[in-house]
Image (cartoon, rainbow, N blue to C red; front, side, top):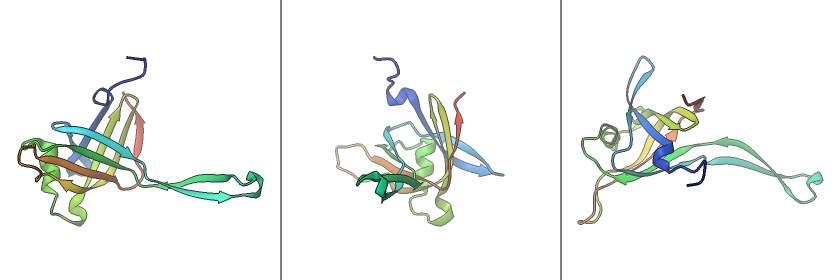
Length: 146
């Protein structure tokens, strides 16, 4: 494998806050049964046409709404999956949590809300699905990984 190329499992860890006490979260790793995670930044881009651009656009990123899409199979008894599944029919602040994403170089933490939870259904001969979106609430804290 070329230098700098790593499989996702080797370079990425995602954890979800399952309990909060005095502003400190207890996290559970979201990995059992999880096949994929994709981080979408969902940028807001303003495009302007200025005279000095001679017909070419000038773009500025003015905002974002990051989210992590999780896909996999339902593993009953897994702390992170059970916590998320338990939120499926809740509303408002009961859906709020915290997310921690660790890569080889950065640790990203942010308050979040968990949406689009799917943890049962499907075809008779398939494993039960587990999918959700973890949407950031506010600006994440990004630090160097240790």
